[in-house]
Length: 534
Image 1: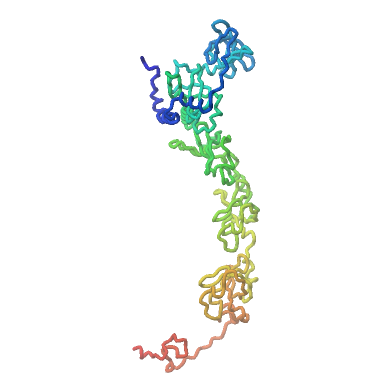
Image 2: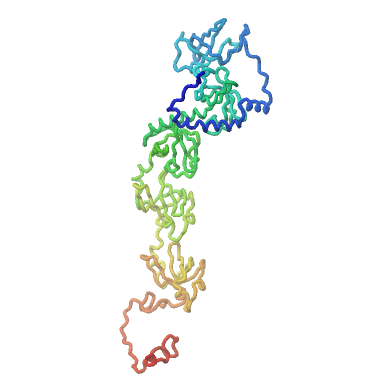
């Protein structure tokens, strides 16, 4: 006796889905756990208790048995609204059936003969409800074969999967792992539904069939994916549905293959979290940005199908303008400022304040509205550079008049080094006190005299607006005006006045010694003579 199962198509054997058959069989075996379908159903009955006593099957007045799932031939008798009435011929009498018109590809012709499957009988109305879809997809034991696509109704669930009934009363089982492409938690939601699936195993002896909807979906997905890849082109605008949200973007199902919208391509405004913009299941219109057929990767853009705010912005701003704008976020190198929806500028940390700061958040916070000066515009690169300190005015303008040489000023110590201390006279104007100007006597360490945070009165030795430098002195505070610096330097009373040249008389050679005398600082040669060194 020959095997009724048709030979496998060589093209099908090489397909990705067929290659996965062994993996699929392993998954089904794992789901069954070495038990038969009958054992799973029996265990489920023991857990849930015996099923309620079923009512006696309906019969007509002549006592005919239930006709459900039988394939019957009939003639189209009439079409009324959404229903098609069919005359069925039985063994003893003609019966009338009804089938929804939506089950036909087009309205059937009156008088045409077709096959139908009996869905159920309504004795009160005297009608037999039929299914055209079941007749097309029916699978009798004679026709049933592995990998065939069949339709079955889910009648119950158990801990291992779904129990189904195929046309002709054939019982089937679908393991939970074979219901969908992804894990399914709610099996109850499938009860009562009609599902299309492929036949994975046939046990003709015990009249049991194992089905896989996942296998069918994978097959359709593979075919749809290749078809879609052949059709896709960069620049196309496509409709899709969000399938998953991740930290770096969102995946969109284009109808057989997923593409990625990176978070940077979601909106012209900054997006922190993709889930704030998109939700799973949301329909979207996207633009194809890049295609990598070898790795089946597709880059999509959501903002690219929206008007680009930069295109109409070039005449709205120029260097020198002052604008009011909101801080949208801070970074280590500066703050991002929203000028208009979709238009952001950068406020560098160096342009936030005239005084020294390390981080933007020391001065500005997210949400602050600032008055800013535009100091750079490059629309080609979509860059706008802003300045907060320049919008507030340069504190060095007029500093030479405000902090004139020899004047006494108040300042605050903001930093110390080995060579001196930095003094803040006002925000953005800082001066330096050299260690030699801290006291008339020798100072070993700056912190012996000044510490950060102290307020002190100091005298201005020199100031330059152009160089933005101020030299200060602490030791000269109590000296008379004009005596705070050395001869001939700024601050000296004779600075700027030419003095007459006076020759210095030379001592007689006989009085010369090899160094300083004994009353000096001891840094010379003392009583030594040049002859002593010969």
